[in-house]
Each structure stands twice: as C-alpha cells, then as structure tokens.
Length: 272
Picture 1 (cartoon, rainbow, N blue to C red):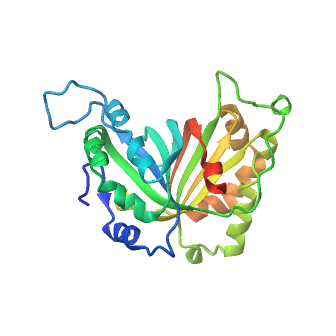
Picture 2 (picture 1 turned 60 degrees about the horizontal axis):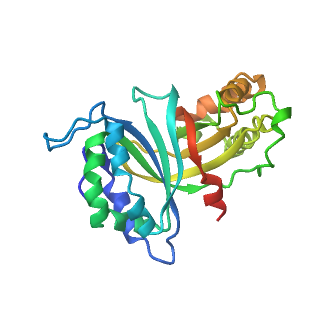
C-alpha cells in the first residue's frame, strides 16, 4: 500500500489489520471524514472538469464492498463544524467490514483499484479510523411520541448527528480518576433522551489507517431529531455544568460536527 495524495497511511496499523489471526479477527467499522477539492485533480487533463464531490460519487465502491461482505452503515453531509482545527469537512461515512483483513484485501481488488482514481482525484484530505463499538452505560429506550417532544423532526429541520471525534488528555496529569470519567460518560449517554436524542453508536478508535499522523481515542454518533433539539440540549444548564467539570479538562483534541443524516444504520449494524 502506498500513501495516497489525500493522507498518510499508518503502516504499523495496516500490518495489524492484515495479519490479525482469524480467531482474533472480527468486524471493524471504518469511520471516514472527507474533505473535497473544489475541482477534481485528475492526472488526465483531457477529462471534463467536475467537482471533487462529483468525483467521489463516481468512486463509490459499492460492488467491491458487497463482494467482500462489507456494507455502508452511515452517510451524511457536514452542515457545521463547531469545534476543531482549520479543516472544514464535507462528508462523513461509516463502512462496516466483516473482518480487519477484508479491509486490506479490498485494496488489492482490481475492481476497487479501477474506481480509486476518482477518489484520488476528488479527495483533498481524509481521516479513516478503524473503530470498535463501545458499551455505553445506558441502553436506549424506544423513540418517544413526536407529538410530545418540543423539537421533533420536520421537513425543514430533519434528523442530524452530532459527531464527536475525541483525543483525551492524560487523565493522571489532570487529576481525573477513571470513576469520574465513567460518571461523565454515564451522564452524557442520557442527555436529551426525553427530547428524542439517541445514541447511534459510540466507538473506541483502534487505529487511524489514513490521516495526518494524529491519533484518536473515540468517535461518538449522537442522533438528534432536529437541529433545534440539538440547540436546546446544548443550552441545558446541567449539561453545561458537566462539560465544565469534566469534558473540557479531559479533551486534548477534537472535532465536533453537525451532520445532516441521509442514511443511518449504525445501531442496527452493531446489534447484528
């Protein structure tokens, strides 16, 4: 595997993916943050000019994914970036692979390589994280009656994901104990339940196969019925106090993105 133009490969993690023994292997969720070129950068200058996003649409490797037993389980368009560095991500996608090794095997397929020219042309930058589901502490109850919810989904303001990509500080230096962080996580899992807020999936990051050299610890997909519901939760005094007490001290690096969901089967993919 050679590093593509849009990111650096972590070859140590690639080796881990490729050599995990069958008895220790299993499903892996690849979480993709994507930033496109305004105009696709094809080496063939005779091609008609298209946007980077249009090139990525041509790339869409659904047939190779199906052939190895992988499936897309989330897709959305980034609407806002609330926290993070200078990067403004455009899309978020999650693909569930049946094994770690199958991810590497797909890179070697000719039908995948033939499509990859479009990704190489369209993608300015990407982060691809290999993730495993976390056992969050509060099982989710059924969705409420939307007629009893203050900010239900509407045709003008439909479902969103508040996506948190997190790198934690060294808790020992901060004086945070595992028990304190577990308490914060437990509270975070219950925020907004009465408003229809649910967890699509919380993941621990096993490794970053493509990126910029940074390492990450967690990716959290929190599903809100609307952006109005998200704003109501953000302004909740109890949440703000919990954030001041634990979250702000615990996080070294993060992206917080508002993503307009077009397809979300994360929860179902975890429960299979």
